[in-house]
Amino acid sequence: MLGLSSLKLTVEQELIHGVSATNDHNNTIRTGTLWSTVAYIITAALLCGWLQFLNFFGTGVAYVVTTSTCMIAIQKSNCYHKEGQEATYQVVFDKVAEINASKESWNIRVKVVMLWKPTYINNPNMVASLDMILIDQEGSRIQATIKKNLIPVFESLFDEGAVREISNFAMASNESEYMLVPHKHKINFYKTTKVRVSNDFVDTVDPYHFISFPDLLARNFDTRVAFDFLGEVVSTDPMRVIVEYGREKRLMNLVAQDLSGTRIAVALWGSFAMKLNTYISQHNNDTAPVIILLRLAKLKIWGGQPQVGNCLFGSRLHINDDMPQILEFKSNLNALDTNVESSSRTSQLNSDTVVANPEDYYLRFQIKNIDEIPDFNEEVGLTIIATIIGFDMDDGWYSFYCRDCSKKVTKNDDDVDAGPFHCDGCGFVSDVFGKIRIVVRVQDESGSSSFVLFERHVKDLIHRGNQWLMDKIAKDQGRQQIPDEFKILLNKKFVFKVQISMFNLQNNYRAYTVHKLTDDERVLAEVTKRSPNHQHDNINDNGTPINKSNKENTNSVHDDNLDVVDLEAVTPSSSTGKRPIEIDANTDSLEWSSSKTCAVRDTLKIPKLEKLD
Image 1 (tube, one colour):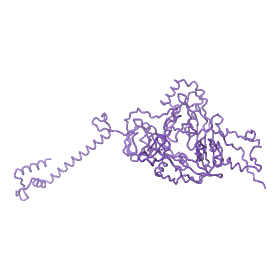
Image 2: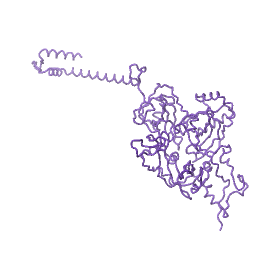
Image 3: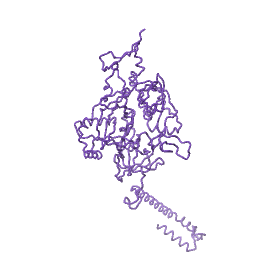
Image 4: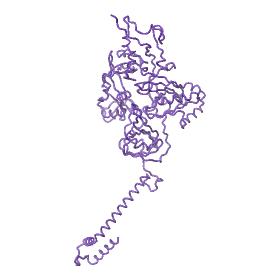
């Protein structure tokens, strides 16, 4: 600065002397302009100029560092206001209800409501992802998924009940036959997704989403979306162990009621059945009511009857736990004085276990050939052994359904100003979702027919998930070209349980809905033994059946000309007086059946007799 002052003084002196300067020979020269004089003097004072340049550079660096530090502090404080966190205006976070796939620059502040690790179906010991249910301060919920390879990066940042600020994430479709939350999208984490810890959350929202029993029975809600279920267990059937494909599945069928006495059927599968069965056996002498709270339950409709069940992943079962919802239910139950019958309720809770063979399900229905299907003129379930020989593509392999009423929609090619689809219930619409529906051609020794498979069957048969199927629909763009992966079904023999419905009968519609199917060798063998073709092979020349009717050491009860096997060995719960239940292992659900016709088990193996010459 001293050098700069000296330079300034020198320049001023030169200006006084007529804008002159001295050259190297001590001669006084005059310059033409002020700038020439300044340039001459600066050249002579080069060192002073460099020092001044460095001074300005240092000042600039200081300004940059100071500004950056201030901005970081402002960002960390989450407030662009001199009053800091006490300011009226804060950084605005996006509402969960409003985020969509239109961009990726969303910034949300949410609370982790539930956290779990789904596993692969074929390898239950291997974790597939880390999933969460998140909720914002307005009560809007969304599902988030962290893929397997990113779990080590993010797992330590999340716990149930934690509040987090999340940004830079992907928005994937949440379109599915079953949705854990009603949001149309779900969050997928990137490696670059940012997660920040936060304690600023108004914890007044209710993370539970209960549906009343009357609404469940009337289906007055979106039945695709999971819900929370709370009720008193008033009766249970024995837990059933179903062996299929070498794996055991457990099922407990029960009835629950609310405070008003309204009842609904419940089916618990897997570890949920085990947990309730164990609790009942350990509290067999207790007279207190058994209250269950099932998080993320789903509703299935079978035979026109609604039934509550657990989801494959994400559900959680609480039994008489000390949590506010259960304690409040018990308190209200006591206030209603309904616990006076608690002893009778307890006596209806059964902790027995029975083992069911996989073929038992199919043997509950009449086993028929394909050419016998048109002979029926009433609703009935049938067991058919047939081979898939092709696909009937007249209706494609998927259809679109209205988001609001779930009715099938048709493409609108006539009115360009209206929505792209037409719904009979809602008119022209654009908000639709896809659902798999494949008509397969099947054949046996007697003829051929058309059977209808739905998404729940297809994804198990081809070992693909819902998202893969939805991606295939999106890429197909309405061309209805069946994926190559579906072709593995061709030329395979299955045991089908099909339903002849009132729609089939009234409309002469010859495509029959499949409720369940399997290609398990044991099931095929056992059902084949009782098929019409096999029984036809066991006929004597005189037309009399080769059976055990003349044998007295059998377990059959002889009544006139009918042999009846003790069905309690086949269907252990049949003596309860309730209608038999069909177990759909592919959908983890039950189906109530009013069919009273059951296939009869042979207690002795009858050798085939060769015709004598």
